[in-house]
Length: 126
Image (cartoon, rainbow, N blue to C red):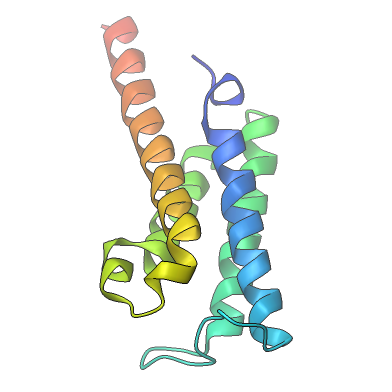
């Protein structure tokens, strides 16, 4: 099945929306928002990178172009930094759980689709 007809495009759209809204919440200081910085990096540039990679992946997937799988996987894995299982320990979980579950569901959808697609390709090739 081509990625254009899978769960990957809608998952990338949700990932873009989640990170965009979190970036806006951070910039406009609307609670709940992510911290301005963590030990590894400042949050706004990270969110911008995830948005950019997800949009690039969406473009490549929609055109069935090179790099679609890699960019989609990168967007999914970066989403886990923002919305991964560690968020279940976050004191803000009662406020952010819809975003956490959505981010994890999108990551699962992308990874599962990429694995299934790879297996299907391997079976048809031989």
